[in-house]
Figure 1 (cartoon, each protein chain N blue to C red):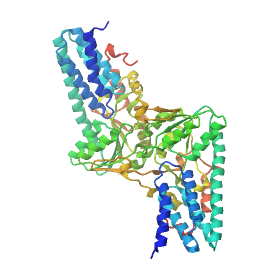
Figure 2: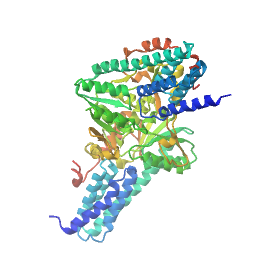
Figure 3: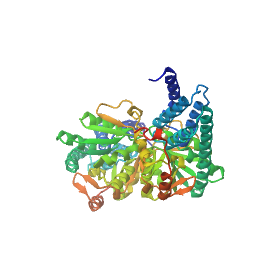
Length: 315
Length: 315
């Protein structure tokens, strides 16, 4: 039986997670930073005076976060890191210390990785050319702003990313950073691509079957493949998951009314936000360790260790 | 110097053409039927008592129609047919008679062609399967409704067609005709395609470089090509134009605010509604005479004769 106290805490954690559940505009790295804040709130809450209830709160937050954005591998790996850290300790004080260290390390890793990926991206970008960027990825944005700040001149082509329009967020951020942007609707991306010499996209999860990213990434990849435009996906290693978890994105169905508010009877709306892109259509996977081959990926996946509480999440 | 009388008539003709200029939802065949009505209004107007002023009105309407929808080859060919008919006659009564005959013949041709194409489409459709249909084409709609009326069971997958959303019009018409429809946003079309065994699209113009259709058709064609899904374009021969005129679609740029009302400074919007799809990505071109090869097309183009008043339109 669930006590009142425990029910109250679950409600509180659900409220903390809700903004992440409803966030269709942020990239994976941004969501991971928000999730770090949620774990920090739980750790610093004075209510937790018992080991069991603190562990239960962390476990509950972990599964809520994963279910809120099933495509976001970084959330899964963050949750896994925290539950593993909590397992190592035996008192409330120790759990808080272990988990805080893990959170700090995770956050530092995200920031360092973004900087390393930005260096690699700069080397990939031909000066003076047009770069295609799809959807919204804070990693892609930081790569492009970094290149601009280092005096590299280029233009960016992008599309709006229906239905959430996070392509507009990308365009706004880049334009505010002094980058000239040209935006069109998604189905017209093939019109801009022949003017681009390279294409960049973020990534929400990577596993041996391919990478998961916002819907439309597969069409972009097919078009780049056909037009011989190199397409790079930026992906720090917190995005890597085992084969079982890479398909979690299929659990992320959104309501049809977000696509068409008053569809007539007889018309069913499909509003699936993520899709799988096989590696055959990607030129390279840029991680903080450099370009990853499928062998590098397999090696990384073989070393993943999943906390027992997360082994059946969303299954 | 333009007389007041002539100025008044030009204003009247512009008003007749305006609905076509602003119509982003209708397919090529629908627009051609509307254009037939405009020529009919001019012919039946009692103001025209002089050969020269009647010819001038027809010429003015012809160029206005072509400039209103430069991608629509049927409008060009209708205008060409009418000006050619008007050239053959020497009195107001004869011009009216010749032009009326030409209009009747053109309309009958459109209707007969749609019926013949629908017969061919029925043979192409595998029973019980899902058909992908893109954008809005009254020819595609009539093919699908005809197949349903003949007891063929199938489902249709489509996408919304930003920014004008004419895919919703397609979905609404088909659902009203008892066809089960599944609709998604444009960038997610690659998610529905693996469930489809065939794809159909309309066509606004065809020439030896390829066919012109609504933006997004090239992405659809690339995806179908890669996924080995046969893609047929439906195109009666009023859509065929010479090489010089097939690129008229490039003159059809729409205002950027139709895509993004309040784009920030530094962001340029591209709102181009049509694009060229090379024949390499199309399985077949279905005309009223059956499947057209590139040889059939070249032969048809070689016989086209363009009225002198239209030889430099939009050039």
